[in-house]
Length: 473
Image 1 (tube, rainbow, N blue to C red):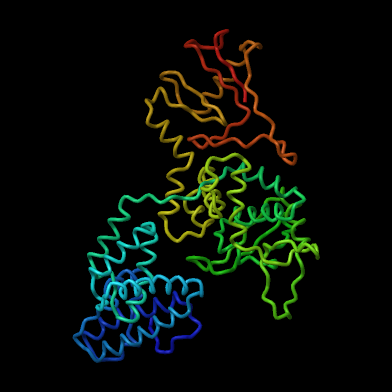
Image 2: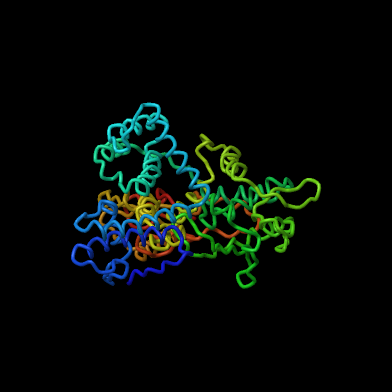
């Protein structure tokens, strides 16, 4: 990879920052040996972007002063790129950065702090912020202020060990609160309840849940979806959402489907959308819009403050404890949790949620239902372990094999002599009028699938007797 002098102007902020960091670090190593052109140095092919970023994280602006002329020239170029990357941030992000930076400046003015490098003053400032913000937010403030120091003072606050130690002490024992989640049954029930309502706001609620839940979208992502991104897939006979917008950490496009059982709800909502003229000076509206009372069409964009209330309102409707724990992020967390509970692999779950880090995905997998059941059974003595079959448990006798095929044969043989008066367990019929099939069988730990199983728990002898308990599911 060759770092060229003609940096293109259409690079996004993320690429500019990487280029600046790469230039600063690799140029420093180069200038220690020669006075050649630092802009055209060679970077090893086997050194990936992640390796470069990790290598320069601590010393990007603590450049070796062995060659002041070349280093200062190189540093200026890196600073120019960082300033451009900073200016390319979204207005919302710039506003947040400016807000927290001004708080630090006001603190300095209030306490007569003249030295920007006064580490004790910076620690005192974050101690004051800790009284107002959560530990996780303190790191956001740290990042905002560090950005200013990096550009204006050529200093990385990471070099202040006392500050880092203070921030780590605040987050060491902190457990962040996460949005509560809904089960698939609760999601399905409320989507049909709201979607079949005649109230425009209830219909908006149903479509918001579908777009957010089945796409694992954050609130900021939901607001980017336009009407042209939603189309009907004739082949799959369902509505399809195409998302090609820049996300929080990735810019990879994706397409996801809304189940066919919600086709009527989606079609009803889309028919209410007002047409948008691309030739007009008005910006293209969002897909999620409020109903205009006079025109009877959806014209005005639905705001985040309105959309974020749907989760807590739904939790209140189904009598959930503490509805305030349900936020707009509950749709994304619910989808990820339900996928993990269904046994989706970590790689597929990571793709579905577009996560960059494995740690977030591992959190969902490690607490998923299959692993909880497996851990519970494996920690029991071998003769007490239970084999999951559908919604029931099969308890093998002492010394009996856990092989599903062997147990199945034994159950069928035992049932042929079982008394007809045995009490049978019934599964209630699903409420959905479009789906009256029984739920699919849950895979057993060995990978064998079961459905319509009958369980016989023996009283200690072979074959069934009047004292055996028989249940059919």
